[in-house]
Image 1 (cartoon, rainbow, N blue to C red):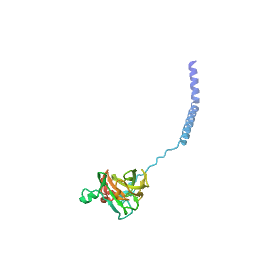
Image 2 (cartoon, rainbow, N blue to C red):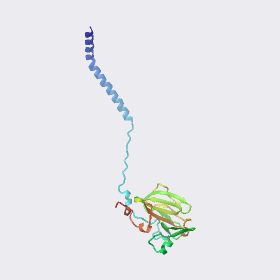
Image 3 (cartoon, helix red, strand yellow):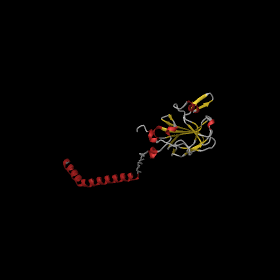
Image 4 (cartoon, rainbow, N blue to C red):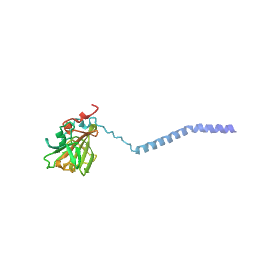
Length: 215
């Protein structure tokens, strides 16, 4: 009796096996359809690739220029050069009280009295803007190859930290300062590489790529 019952059940399963197989396929299809539908609603994150300029936006071809539009500005106080004559060295020393400071830049002016626009000597990024009680407004711009230019004795500024400036952009207006009041209305201009002051006279007219240590 038990064997007959097993045979009956087995025959029934064989009869319905194909139906069960189709049912399983249908269930699987419905599950796949639901998953696909959900995936269609999920937004796809698109990755935006930023192409880095290989030529530094042609900045490597720029040539250092004077920080003002005047082609032949007057130099009120020159850069202190250890190789200069004693007479020129004395003219490049600034006295503040009983302390003497060698001038780390060049003081350019039109006539000592007329205000003028101070221009970016080279394209770069503004890394410092502050109002110093002795130097007036100070602006520092960072360039390629560890080069920086500094502009002080400004009466006002047109830029902020983080600004990208192009060569010739107006950084501010020249004024007077309390550190070297004898210079009158001027811009104190410095050029530095890796924190070391260079003689601006040696830099003006040269190409920025000349200071690439990998060359």
